Image (cartoon, rainbow, N blue to C red):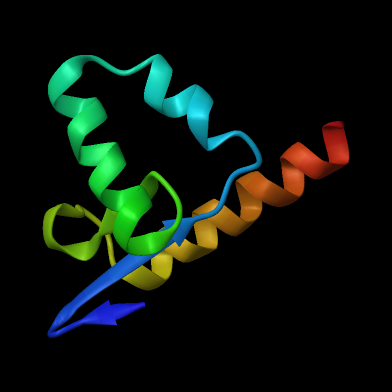
Length: 71
């Protein structure tokens, strides 16, 4: 998705509550905000990346494919 000039990769997970319960307090607040706005606690903004957004998407897709193959 894109908000203004910022690209955001949102990652939908089966167990969002697990990410919330394992996080420390400040991180848990951020994850809850993500969950409220994006319906998932996990998102990655292109603002702080050391690679291109396209590279991030490629790597995430590769890891998802590997995870599915191993499962």
